[in-house]
Image (cartoon, protein in one colour):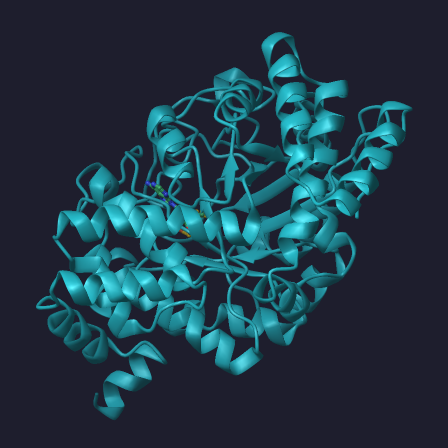
Length: 469
Ligand code: SAM
Ligand code: SF4
């Protein structure tokens, strides 16, 4: 790779990705099965191994890959699925991303920057449904939704209360900041800072981001570095699937993860896999340059699960309900539910329509409906925030995950947060299904852990809240 290209794309080595993909094409079944066997050991994959799994057409290898992905997910995290709700606070944007309904040139979008009072009211609705974790999302506008605004918004979310219930973890997806601004963001006690590169393919990136601050590829690529320098050690990365060849993007995400790991001693906390959804006046969303099929999505999830076993994989409500249920079985560890992608969308159903939202939602089920289905499928819905609140972030979290310790905390904590939900919010079938799942899941804990969890569950029944191991 020439020095000129290097300057343009930083640590993303396009030539290397392309040549590894080329080499991986010719791998046979045996080679693919060997890679899958290694993935099953929860040691992660190298780029050349990933290139093989991304391309194998051998049916036996593909089903072995899916089976191994679920095995790894269960071995590390158990069967818990963490819930969050996105909270869109502003759709005003200085950028012109060709795939997004919030783009500056979309004159048909009703623009809105929520006041602090409106933010508080939105949060109350989410609290009434039982949410404990929020992903705060904003368009990029230095004047209207810059760090001053985000700082106040995070404070408002944390301070909101319904009875004694409050939001326990706020993750933030906003435009890249400077180190000084990230330091201020860190001081507001956020959990994860999330920033998707959208596409790691430089020429596609330039095409998709014709103007505005986001046109600077490297400024965005190095946002996680700046956040880490500011002390935010839980970072979420991802690519917007559909802009460039997904095989290239998945390889680049792994390259990014490896880069962060080698530079900061900790890889990304989460990887998101947003797939392009139709959006108002967003040409690239309505006619994706590289459509990603459901089959491609299955493979992407399984590949990430095997390649970066200790990283959470997030699936949003962009995807359809039935497909989400299926993807959870391939290694997804976090999902959103009951989402609105327009500022004010939870309170005002009028705001929840195409001329205000960022993109079309694929899964319209409420949190309660999704919870019910998960309980029936034997997944443990979790609102746990214990790691973040006990300081188990960044390297500490990864250290525990790599030694198989995190599962011992995730399982009881998921059950404790489920118990709170069942008592405080669940209706009808969800309560019964949830209690049955709880009883079954307790049996799967070691005797010592079971006895500790039973004690804590009894305290929750007596009215205590927010307790964890
Ligand atoms: N404005 C900030 C930014 O772009 O980084 C943060 C908020 S932006 C609303 C959050 C993410 O939404 C983007 O990073 C992009 O991946 C995703 N997104 C944008 N348009 C989308 C679409 N049509 N379908 C699915 N996801 C989309
Ligand atoms: Fe603005 Fe983000 Fe949408 Fe781009 S993706 S138009 S930066 S809100």
